[in-house]
Amino acid sequence: MEQPREPEKTGPNLEGEDALAASESAFDPDAVRIRPKPDAGPVFELEPAVEAPKVKAPSPVAVQEANAKIAEAERREAEERERKKREEESLDGKPLTEPLVPREFRQWRTVAYIGAGVLALAAGLAWHGAAKSGFIVALIVMYTTVLHSGLALGALRLQAMLEQRPMGEWREALARFFLSLAVFHAVLYLPLKTGYVALDKSVLAVAAAGGFVGAVIVLFRWPPRRAVMVGGIQVLIWVALTMHVWLEKLIRVK
Image 1 (tube, one colour):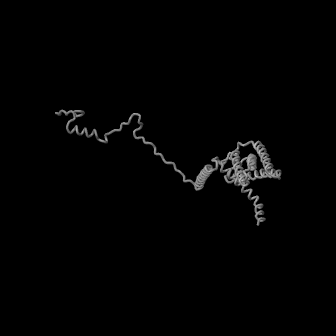
Image 2 (cartoon, rainbow, N blue to C red):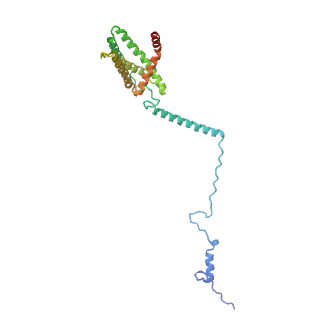
Image 3 (cartoon, rainbow, N blue to C red):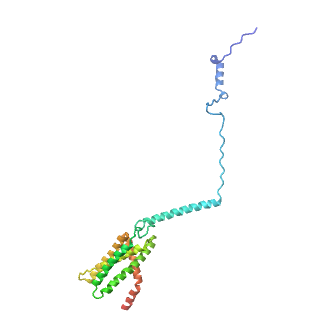
């Protein structure tokens, strides 16, 4: 006779060694299954490997061109720094492209007419102050005014070269120098009589020089230093042109 089979122990009814074996099989690593999320795609799908693009080494010509561009950029930056430095060190703080004679000057005829009137006054004062040769002195005043106006224009040109800036409209500059020199002669021949001829001449000479520099500052809208520099250059030009006269006098005195 067949003996009845014992029922299989499964599920929660496992006891003893069977329960231990079942628990070990439950934690068997080979028995673990990966259950991806529904929206995670294929379980073992890997992204394709990205290959780095092959970069060719630059040619020597390209390297030279790049170096040349860098050198040119550095040169331009250095020139810009130098330009800004010169602007900061300029006499009036204006850009070096701004001419010495302001661009807004457009009335040289009016200034010249005023200068002619002041020069006529200076010639009249010189004529009245001279004892005998008043007419000759008046002619000398007019001649020296015109002559020194041209010398001042040349001095302005040299000043523009020193500052490395454009000079500007020469007619405007000439008319204003003409008026300034007319003021100079008008002050120089004022009837000042203190009883000391040397004192009178010295005071009038200093006042005339101050009147000339002041007129230049006002008419040209310059800082005082530039007006003094232009006046000094004008005097040096005049001394250079008349040096032979002074040398001749020294030779005659000896």
